[in-house]
Length: 335
Image (cartoon, rainbow, N blue to C red; front, side, top):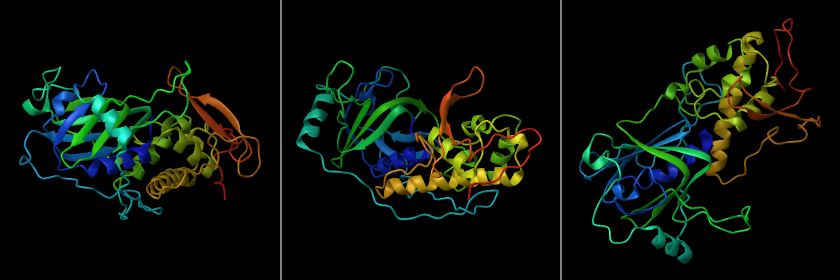
């Protein structure tokens, strides 16, 4: 699924529609009836880790937008243990004009003959307290603004079929949003815990360091969203390589300085990745999906994960990230 930096970019794109009314809907979602969103107002949007939250109200006057076109948070590289300092940078939206083909596709996705908001379930936001739409993205989940995703290659059957969005929202201002490969559900409030969000200015380093110090492989702990919300497989591989730590190294064997360096690289790589997204730059990785590390050593690849848990492909350099023995409680960071 998309990692924290990608979801933050989605959040920024969606935020430009805060304060507008949904005038038409479409999409393939079965659990969430798109028709139930018609005539509602997008009043707020929040992000936490890998999840996006959208607030919809039936009346424009219910509440002012609480997060109108927010700027992304940028944790400082030398952040204090209780949280990084706030460094917000002005970053512009990246919406594009809608092509004729995209408009035609949009018309095909909009239900015709609709008599008003409908929903397959009884928890439509217009009639209850559950006004927040929680969006959890799948492996290739994405949000598109004023255009639709197009097929980049043929499928297994040889067909060049464009991906079908789960939800399409057309707004009174003339633009639209298309959500792909995601799961959506209604809730009464967003589940936001900034202390464990790696891209939040309130990220709690002390809590993260305590979790990493457990007697289990650090590559397992890094993917634990309770302590590193928004951290995914790419960030895991890159942070471990930059810190010179073997993926299966037990956190209890690593020195405090090594654990500090690892958290530093998690925040630094994630923040740089987010800024690259807003600047239109390609992501630069040193170890993820590489055959050789920057030093020219052969890279190892193996699916690693807790017993009985999800196994994730992991890349590491046995020379730059040597495995520790119980007699070697220290490990040096890569220069």
